[in-house]
Image: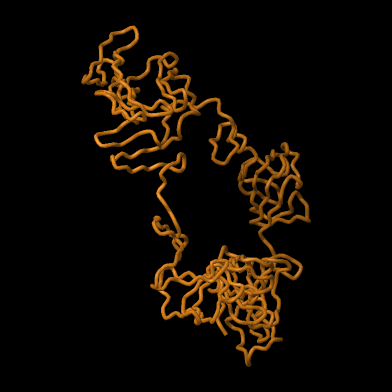
Length: 510
């Protein structure tokens, strides 16, 4: 059985070695233009030109039906037909007349003859005349004798005649600083000389004396192109470029600044003052039994004004504001959440932060300790403990080895973290094979008829191996395969095939 190629075979300039054409006693029916065979009856190589089988010339000559005495012309590849030189005509068919006088006619208009060129009237003209088109023919005309006199100068200023051979130059001025000529350029017959404003000859820079009247010059880079002026104090700070180093204010203030809104905005005094109000403010220790604070003469329970953010640490145990339900011990602390005037503070103004947490139970948060189990039915669990936090996880290091070969109904532990519900689960071993296959391979028939067939494999990579087979004969076939993306492969066939005719097997590599 022959190997089938569904698309053209490009050898990229390489040789096809040890090849034999298909041997047939007669050209087959249903051939396509360009098909080639070896006709074993005629002993000739033949190709199909769309209507008949044509033998390739083999050194025995080329057939034809030309007329004796005419100039031959090749018709196609294998035959010669009549041709001739045109001796008259116009437009697309030009006239070329070669006569005994040696004159050649072009369009019946201009002649090249012995001794020179003649116009349509056969005249060689007179000395000094030129050939010129009138729009309908070519004739000799007299050379023009008038010319334009050129004068260089500025309107209303000095002028000078420009004579043949004069040299005209534009030089840099030493009395008009800033005026500078560029090198001239020439395009076809047009010479352009640009003159612009240049800082090369301007005077030594000096500090401006009056910002509202001193003038800066600047040039526009869009139409109209011109030099313009502006006062120094008319240039806003917002028009400056970004600073590349520290900006020295020279012991001056920046005033009339808005409060910041973004993280990198400069802060104003008003913004900083408002941010400090209500901030964390450590007030020192206090006796939880009596309310006396570290500041002499102050008592948190009776004569101390409270501000948001005031923070007190317990130094002597006692009931907070006499409430037995809120016992405080040294190390506990309280933080003011609402303000209160002197003598009016109560427990409700504070948040209580206790540090003497008891040992944890199943229902009570507290101090606890976690240890690894040595029971064999808990093998695989791993424990780590750091700064009061215990982490229990699954560790394969201590798992028991498998006693026998893996079976389809064996269960494999799976930890799912990214989707709900999260946790540890079991999965049948055979499900792993199905999952891996779906992630690494793909198989499908071509969905529609035609010559271009797209297979969307969704394997997420262009590193895939592709194999094609004929769905009717089950034999492997070949076509052009292009990996057009991370998830698609396009198979191209030279001739149209029906839907479902081929099946693509696509495997992810790596």
